[in-house]
Each structure stands twice: as C-alpha cells, then as structure tokens.
Amino acid sequence: MDSRSRIKSGINPGELLMALGLAALGIFVIAGTQDIGGGSAYSQVGPRSFPLVIGAGLVILGAVLAWQAVSGGWRNVPMDEPHEAPDWMAFAILSGAIILHMAAIAWAGFILASTFLFTLIARGFGSRRLVRDIVIGLVLSTLAYFLFTRGLGLNLPAGLLGGF
Image (cartoon, rainbow, N blue to C red; front, side, top):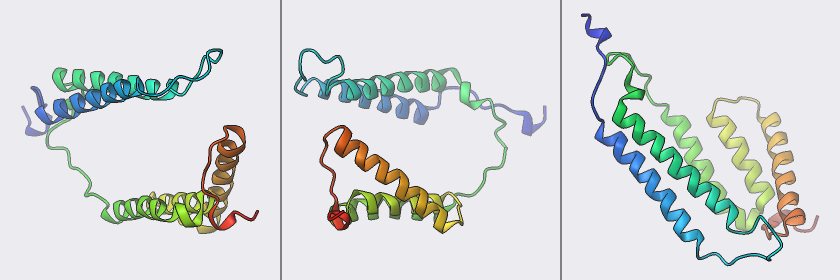
C-alpha cells in the first residue's frame, strides 16, 4: 500500500472538543434567550425567535461535527496531501477590518463604517476593484441602515452622515 493512499482513522480529540464547544455555545444561547422579555401576545415572532434559531443551529451543527469527529467522515483524505500555506496578509486585512469597524462605528456611523468593512473584506478576499467595492459596500450598508432604522425601528449610529 502506497503511503499516499493511507487514510487517517480514529477519533480526533481536537475536532470532537471543538464540536462539543459549539454545541455548548448553542445551549448557552438558548438558555440565555429565556431571560429576554416577551413581545406582545399577538405576535408570533418576538425578540426570542432569532436567538432561539441561532442557538438551535449551533447545537445542530455541533452535533453534526461531533458525529463527523467520531465517525471519521471528514478524514477520508490522504494524510500526505499537501496544504497551502496560510495567507497571513489576508488574515491581517480581515482582522484589521473588523477592528476598524468596531472602532469607527460610533463616530463615523453605521453606513461609513460598514462601507469600509465591506471594502476591506473584499480586498482581503482578493478583490482589486476598489471603486466597485466602495459602491457596493455603500449601497448595501445604506439599505441595511434604512431597513433597520426605518423598518425595524432600531437605533444605529448615523455618525458623520447624521445630517442627511
């Protein structure tokens, strides 16, 4: 048997631990959802609905990943298959974009901070079309801003564009 055709078998403790952690996070979200006050009695969708869906999804994904970790479903790949080196520049751009968004949203506002976030994330994924990315980010963040502020009545920071 060729060394390239060997298949890794057995339980991977790291994968199992990650899967159980994901399921535990889902249970934590579901338990925390019980503390959220209920909405009006006539509404079928209240403030608890989305956290419950997210928590249930995390539990389901954790269970599927745990099953995969135990059954070896993800490891049917030859052990000697070469892997690409991590793209640390992309990682740095994505991390910086998230940190910049958190730092800028209060003073720049949701629209501008989210536009910068979209543009930098597109750059991190390899896009070289700066103007197109800015326009798409601006359109999407403006639509999201008005959907949340006007449609759902949430308060998002207007920032520098507050006069408009």
